[in-house]
Image 1 (cartoon, rainbow, N blue to C red):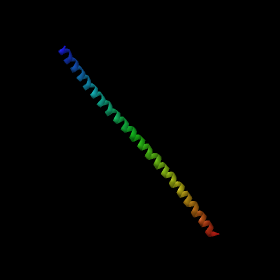
Image 2 (cartoon, helix red, strand yellow):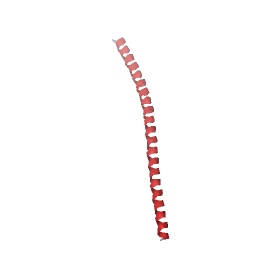
Image 3 (cartoon, rainbow, N blue to C red):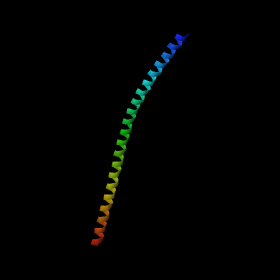
Image 4 (tube, one colour):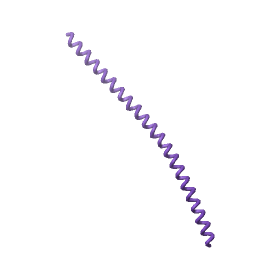
Length: 77
């Protein structure tokens, strides 16, 4: 009976070591996969924000030019 218990204990320890390695590898792969997804999202966000900033600058410049044209027209009259 003692030999059976030792074999069972050894098998369980081996199984736990294999599972531990598997979990470490899986979590490492998951971390790498998530990091690239996060990087892609941040890149996408930094594009949409830059694009929005450009749109705001164009609207501001257009309004500035309209204001200058209106002021010059009023000055001529």
